[in-house]
Length: 90
Ligand SMILES: [Zn+2]
Image 1 (cartoon, rainbow, N blue to C red):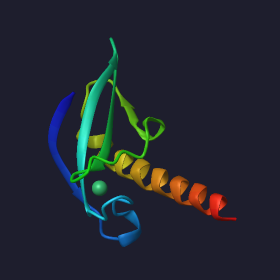
Image 2 (cartoon, protein in one colour):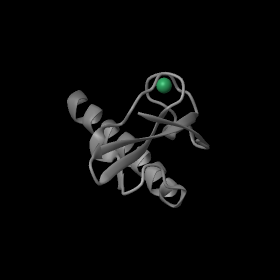
Image 3 (cartoon, rainbow, N blue to C red):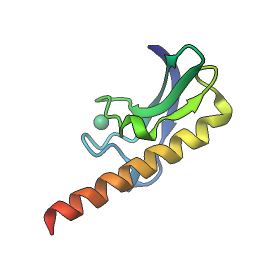
Image 4 (cartoon, rainbow, N blue to C red):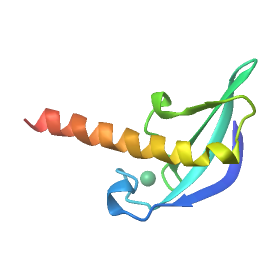
């Protein structure tokens, strides 16, 4: 796995890591096949990952121009997780 020193700080508490409430995400990327890669943000402290379905597909590993999409994917993943938890409570 290609470890990047890309960090993102979340402003809103609801976007912090659901496991350890860390507000700093670490950007990661990896090659998934010969000609495609994915990149995503995960918790910089515990490594919590919202799931592969919320990773951004890229051609060349980490691409800064997709950083905003990776952050959006983190947020979407969290929202999905929250919705799932709510369903379980009901
Ligand atoms: Zn965490």
